[in-house]
Structure formats: structure tokens, C-alpha cells
Image (cartoon, rainbow, N blue to C red; front, top):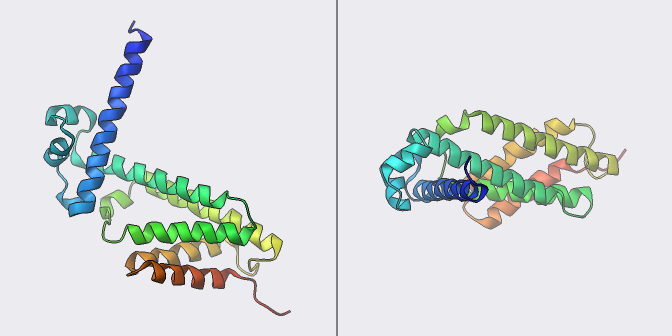
Length: 192
């Protein structure tokens, strides 16, 4: 039986090595794009031997998938925090949409390649985000701020697709305008 302190030290070391490898992967993707990332570069950047790196990840695709999963988890946490802030439904919806557009804008040019988008964690994250946003929109519809002539899930899909265009924006001001246009489309129409 391995003593508890030794186990905790091993687990901490494993987390540290894994984190360093994922951090190096993030840097390399930002610098050169997904296709140019190699196990040798990751090992060199972290100071970890290639043999050690292969003990944690069998190939470069697996490390890219792990890096992408971490990115998706961080983005979902950011969006959840934005949606849980105090305020009326439209304020919270605006916070989530602004955060989502900011993520799309900051990710411009760092497309993690089609192979990563086909991974199960991506579809699960998309479903989670659509459901989360649909709940906020339904709350907004009940309060009278959000239109109720379109189903909340349809509105959520509209928002996410529209704000995905923020990846092509050239400035933060352009992102803000895109968010404003999207929010205007959510508001309950005036009149009878």
C-alpha cells in the first residue's frame, strides 16, 4: 500500500505534468496553429522528455483533444458565471452573449481543426450551452423582456450562430455592435 502523502505527491506531479503539456500546447496553437503542433515541440517547450510525454498522451491528437476539452470547460465556466450574475434576465442574457462573442473574437485564427470539433465533448458543450441560454431566454420571456413568439431553444440557436460571426470581427467595437444587433432581435416586439 502506497502511503497517502506519496499518492498525493504522485497525483500532484501528474496534474502538473499534464497542465504544463496543455499550457505548452495552447501556446503552440496560438503561435503556429493546430497543424504545426508536434509532440517534440510540446516536450521541448515544457522541459519534459518525449518518453515521459508519451506516458501521458499516446499521440499529438490526444493532447490536442485534451487541450481543447480544457478550453471548452473554461469557456462554459465563464459563460455560466456571466449568466448567474445578479440582475434582470436581459442583463444576464446580455452578459452571456457578450462573453460568448468575446470568446469567438479571441479565438479568431486559432481554429482547433475539424478533428477536434467532431469530438463528443464539443457536442456535449454545445448542448449544455444551448440549454443554458434557452433557460435564460425563457426566463426573459416570462418577465416580458424577451419575445415569446419564437421557442427559447430556437432563439438560443439564433444567438449562438449569429455571435459565432464575432470570430471574423476586426475590433472589440465590432463585436459589441454584433451583440447589440443580436440582443435587439431578442426583444419583445412593441405593439399588440
